[in-house]
Image (cartoon, rainbow, N blue to C red; front, side):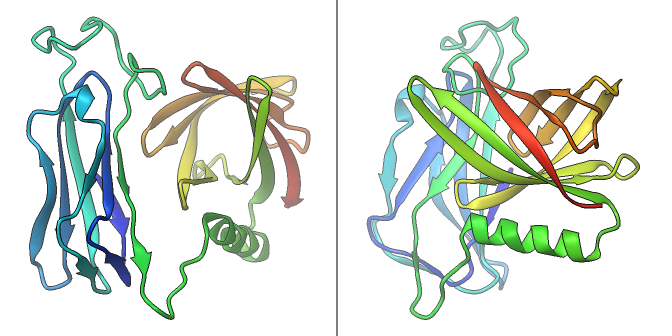
Length: 236
């Protein structure tokens, strides 16, 4: 289940909602939950079909008071009884290809007058500044680069290095900052491997240099893509 805080937002008439899954999607429900305990179903797809990966629009506007949230709950069917399942024998992970899976609930909204939420990049800067100012663990700035054809995009992220507590990786995604945890870290001074656990699945990380060293770099397996990263120590 995913939750999105939406205090002070207005879901206008015609607000777009997109339930994003792939061939193994079984059902998907959006529910607005209010501070007084009331709840309201915004969208219910009881028999999800890949062809339903489309845009739905609210018929009436909806005000979301402070303390409200939207719950997105979905289920998958990876069995042979699912006629759309491309391979019921396969262990399925997150990925952008249709034979992989994802579960993302998109919601468009407008902001009430006088309220301007911070961007993901601004929130990441607040996290970075707090870690540098008050955390005794090493903090790294990591630049992740994704390339597709002749297009290249670089995303600035932050890593808090803490082998004892679990190293945290803060990544801005779709207007939010997701907190991932690096686990199963193995390696030596020449390189390392690890698993990055994030809200929508796990990714494999392979790096050059010692993990936690000032010269870390490497790749992240993101579905069929290999993302590259370079680390810079900003606090120790």
